[in-house]
Amino acid sequence: MTFLELAKDRYSVRSFKDTPIEEDKMKAILEAAKVAPTACNNQPQKIYVVRSEENRAKLAGVCRCTFDAPVILVVCYDKTRDWKNKRMPGYSSGETDAAIVCTHMMLEAWELGIGSCWVGMFNSDEVVETLGLPDNVCVSALLPMGYAKNDVEPLNLHSIYRADEDMVEYM
Ligand SMILES: Cc1cc2nc3c(=O)[nH]c(=O)nc-3n(C[C@H](O)[C@H](O)[C@H](O)COP(=O)(O)O)c2cc1C
Image (cartoon, rainbow, N blue to C red; front, side):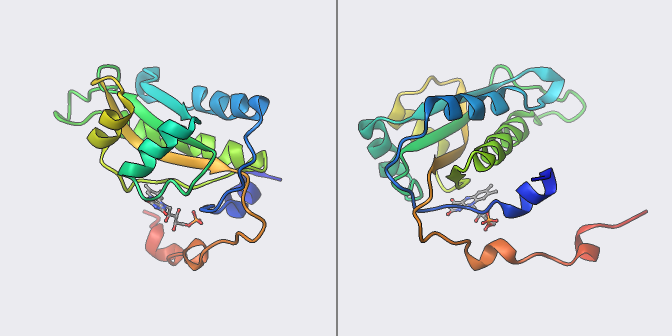
């Protein structure tokens, strides 16, 4: 598959088999996180690989979109490491860096036959508290992942695109 074929093929998976993700595949997914570009190469990303029954239940208690996945990646950035833009006080790169990291992992997983769904519907402080994460991390996304159940199909939203001319303007 070309990159564009892979990007078009991927869709959000919200129903998973219990089958665990193999260690070598998990390593490849985390490798994709490592090589993601970050502002000034500060690499503020921190990823918690949540697999235990206990911690998955804790996450399910603060987010209704964990979908009973066998693995939930908690994609964070370290607030003390992200790049601070002096020309735009108040702006820092953490959310952007974490989003690129998350996208890399989502696409690498798909190439390996593993589905995931980007989840933003949670409160970072609640996730930090329930998992006992350090105060310096901010949770940017949850990425429940695993092998899709056999009957899973993309939702309608997957194939709704705005018109090219709305999205792009040549100047
Ligand atoms: C920043 C962000 C937050 C999202 N949050 C959620 C969420 O909380 N729950 C959910 O079911 N899907 C969530 N999604 C998935 C989107 O709904 C989905 O990507 C979009 O509808 C396009 O569908 P597709 O991924 O199947 O192509 C989120 C996606 C992004 C990029």
